[in-house]
Length: 239
Image 1 (cartoon, rainbow, N blue to C red):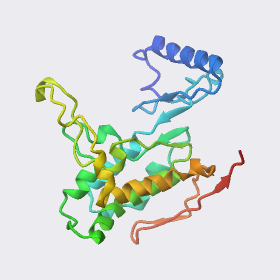
Image 2 (image 1 turned 120 degrees about the horizontal axis):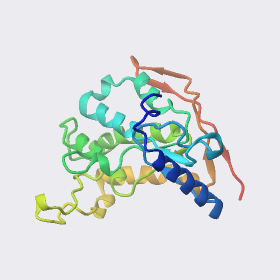
Image 3 (image 1 turned 60 degrees about the vertical axis):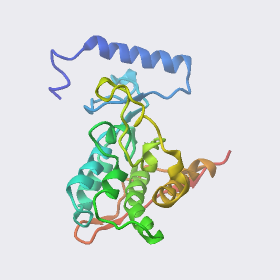
């Protein structure tokens, strides 16, 4: 706790966040505030009456970084289920989980789809090839979605596996818009169509009023046999 409680902490900034959350929730009781924090600052989502900062959710940046590290450094047949599950279910806070966002495809980095498509692991051509290429990302999304607990975030754009990096206009590229766009035509065929269809199925919880409760009851995971057994608790909510 010393790194969070010392003379370098900006107390005025903390007071500002507390007052902002109190004001917003008083004026708009249904509002949701989300903290994008990379330090795992304690008390982000605790009530201000209990010494917290009063946010409803905080973004869990460790999950996409964990998946990125596995994709870039470890062959998929050597992934550790123990390490993966430890990251996914380790937090007790109201974490908002996601697979990847623009940080994974910004200048100098690659989206998950770009890593898989350009890794040479898969051949390209047949429908079966497209299914094989999409399967790894589907598994990543499914495990993250079903263990997200408090909330799951699905980004428009990179979450359907944008194959190129996103680069905003800047002096280094003569302020070009060439990479500052989304290729929506990718949704119509092959690899990206399979992933888009999968994302739509994952979002049917809103359509059918299905609630997936927080699950820390992963019954069994075995890194040697790549087995992950979970109990998913669901219920329907009447309108």
